[in-house]
Amino acid sequence: MDTCANQSISPEEALDPSPSASPGVKPQSRSEQIAQALAITLLYIVPAFVYLRFASAADFDIWWHLRTGQWIAQHHAIPHVDLFSSATRGKPWEAYSWLFALLNFQLFQRLGLSGIVVYTAGMILAITVALHHLVKRLQQDFSIGLLLTGAICLTMGRLYVPRPWLFTILFSVFELNILMHVRKTGRLRELLWLPAIFALWANIHIQFIDGLIILGIALAESVLTLRRAGAATRIPLRPIAFTFVGCLLATLINPYGWHIYKTAHDLAVQPGAFSLVSELQALPFRDISDFAVLFLAFACVAMLARSRRFLIFESLLFLFAAIVSFRSQRDLWVMAIAAAAILASTITGRKTAQRLPAFSSLLFVPAAAAALLLASFALHVNNARLGARMAKTLPVRAVAAVKARNYSGPVYNNYNWGGYLIWELRLPVSIDGRAGLHGDERLHRSQVTWNGEPGWATDPQLISAGMVIAPVKAPLTQLLRLDPKFKLTYEDDLAAVFIPANGRPVLPMLPPDLPQPIMH
Image (tube, rainbow, N blue to C red; front, side):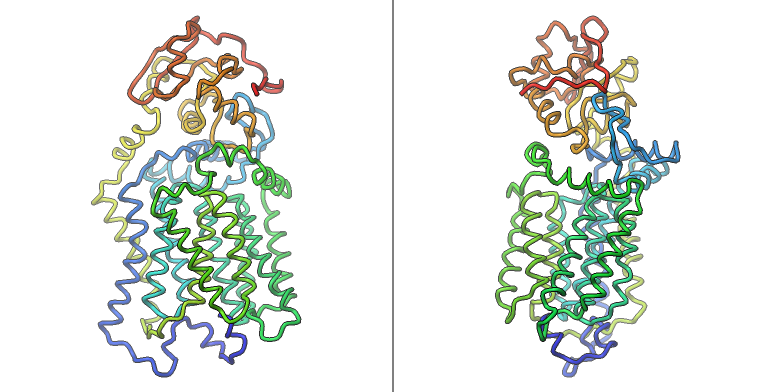
């Protein structure tokens, strides 16, 4: 990568990721072309197929997203205050993933639970294709490019759930692909795509901030190499500076304007969530994919150290990826795609002829999509099976009992089940997956109560609850069985339902605008 600036290359040669035009490369036979086509198609299939093999609609957060999307579709507006929680109802809230919520609600409305799987599998396929395009632009060896792409896609397996962060991964790959190619070739026209990407990104997921940081790294490289001869980038300072400003302005095209940056800041500095929410905690290194992330990091260090010169962009990108990915397992994708760019551009492979027909790449994606559709039928991925799997994780039967008995809210629930109860019961819940909205104190208060720690009985939301929907094995559940103020009215092997013994809340519910007492 770092030698490109010292070589004279034609625009056509720079745009062509294959080294087939290079001297000394043996032309391919027809059988080799077919083998490569099959290998690429198989690469596109495998990550999404692995997801389909274990596909589930039991993600905890997708449900409050669906409820948000439904509200948007019904009211033709974007919410600016909380609508779903008893403690925060009416409090300012920015549904920064509103476009994701609306998209998934439309899919759910047409396909049911299968719509959630269609979204996830489709995004996995798109990420795989985009990542392979990034790698093959940087790596001349066909086999290395194929293996590197496959390994990185499988490393991100734990992230293949119906969340808006799949769009963030996809857009980050797009961005990195553009930046790496423009740095290599100097073809500045590709930078024009970035403001459009960021305008869409800012309406889908708050982590467009990560994309701005990556773009800022490219800008910093141009600044640092302004007076340096033979630099590893062909992006002049002015174009990348204008691009950065353009992308920054594009992110303001959202329903909340500049306030979305305040939300991003609040989420980033919320220490309690990173300690209490499992997906925000650091990698536990209990799974092979965790060690794969660590291996990728070591490989990047080795290849950067092996380079003859200090690669500014790659080194800063790796530093950013290491900080973010090892802070939170949810963000391991940053290290994954950074490793894809760094390793693909620094590993020396043999030049492999890739003279597939120009139109063939257009056939790989629909062929993979068709194969995945057939696989979903073969694996019986349908609404009935998805519903059965969901009932093993979410309180589906308990909710049915609550509806049959027409219990009233508000509901006292744990963090994981809040989103599902928002969707199914249409009653105010005590807490849900919107950690930024609830804040550290409420997250901690909920954990204290559900763990049955001293002071659990003074939780104001428990006291004012019209019903409690509890996991049967939770410490609080065992305490409520013995508490005369509550009556057990339903229980299965997953969930239990309690109501106040006198048939109504033990105390009146506090108005949402009054401060709720917090136990420390």
